[in-house]
Image 1 (cartoon, one colour):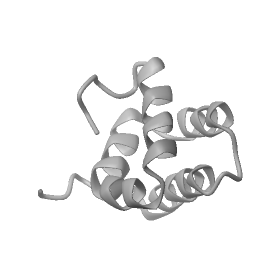
Image 2 (cartoon, helix red, strand yellow):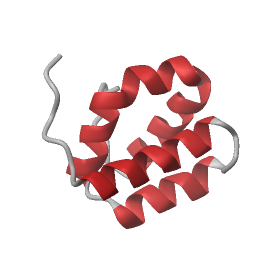
Image 3 (cartoon, rainbow, N blue to C red):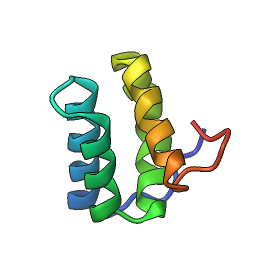
Length: 82
């Protein structure tokens, strides 16, 4: 799958850090989703999840799914994506 346009490095790294912290169980879903929504555009979120989604799934599939569902609830991700 080709990479989507990558957000600026700092933004990409921040989003990646927030997701990994959630996957490791250091934050709750609601606070992770809120931090992601407050700091990143829909395009940035989709780009990072597109590029890193498989790695996130391998790390903790159940929590990654929980995060994706939380983002969908805020209409950030379309049904069927990720």
